Image 1 (cartoon, rainbow, N blue to C red):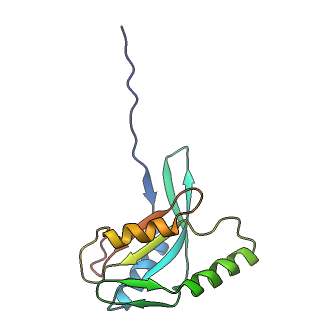
Image 2: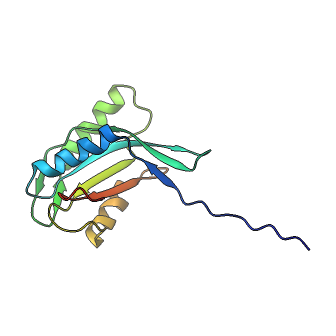
Image 3: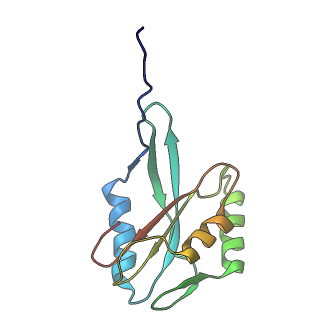
Length: 132
């Protein structure tokens, strides 16, 4: 009997250089942790997520081991996007760990859950050594 096994292809992230550079420049410009948003689309044919836009940073409070976005700033940001005709709010969140390693902490996991939308969210952690 001939068995066919399905091949699992993990999703990929296509991270155009201009967007990579913008996120890294944000991380390099701050001595504290920072966070921001980006747009990402999913391409089913290639099973790839593609970063399509990185937004300007919102007002926030950052420290050596945390970043807090202002909820009113997020609401204004979302309202502006909707007013401009956006059909989908950003599906990407990035934050820096300044000089620490890159990993998702329990706080990061909680933030991702709070940011969740009706489909998916892609989250990135970066640092000043330009690691992702």
